[in-house]
Length: 470
Image (cartoon, rainbow, N blue to C red):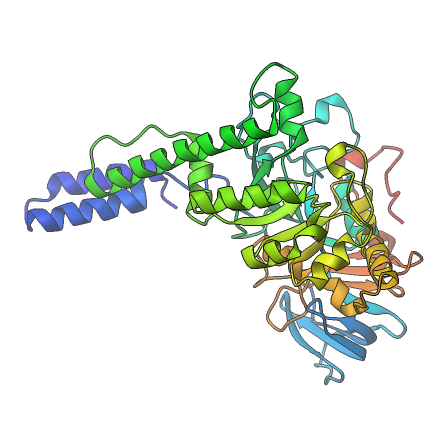
């Protein structure tokens, strides 16, 4: 593919040779060329992901949760060419297909963790590996967390083999009001970050409100040192980004000297254009309401409140604004803004008609997200909120897929979607259950009964942890 710089040179050469046509037509052509070529390359680090090879497979006799609330007992799933081909009570087994006996087992879509730091806070957890937060300014929207991701992190294979995690959203940390861009990854062995990058998944922007930004920067006698300054600084950043956005619009329409690029403004302008999704670290209900008002002021949408421990107080506002809440089952009280949660938080948000997600934010908890969902489900039932197991699986697959803008590709067992599946060796909401087999894009990447399908990263070779995935 021709590089943008060469394309621009070609366009300029074309203009130099143009001697015919009306002035208005020439201006129109110039504006179109500026719009398509001379701005900048919006995807300088493109995905190079290629699915691992798979084979046509039928799982039969299993209990199936389709990820959208449906359940089929003693059902069958057929996938081939990397895609779900059919899900039904009974199917005719295609010739040549591998048949997996799922009797007594469960099949679900692969788990999607919408809040992970695998790769940018990898294992071993040493100072040299702490690359998840650029704590040098209150607005670091210019950084992209993908440039910190280390594909050799052994945590990826643990999340796959122990947790059935097939897709992850890697977020920057929450010290800053604007922490930088997030990236969505496929959980596959790879040499480079680009080879894990989910094709065409939208970028995210990590924002934070509350205690973290004011503690980090207030402690340095810098702004923001209070919640009111959090909002004031954030609003000014949006105002500056709006001015930057207008400068580029003016250049595309009228020509002249292109504005100097500013990576912070560029990310925020992408949010206002609807191209980048906001993942907003926010605990308290009153602050979430303020953040939704600020989003309305500047014309953007919030995809997800991350760590939304008080979401149960405002399910109506979340539903009306179309904002998801990513929550822990029972983490609370480790700081004041995390104090006022309830164990029924997740089912209460779900029951209120809003989008509920179970997230990890932890290299160990990501291996047990099914159990975290089970805890929340049980707490809800004890409080009289009766949600079925199949319905609750939405918290782990289709809801995070929607919040990441990839629900047309994955997140549920629907014909045509990517064949991301987990075969569990028992009820997936039991503490005794583990993934037995995991497929990504129809490729079998983990089989607990096959030692050759236990992923080991290059870093682990020769280390005490080599092969510790059981």
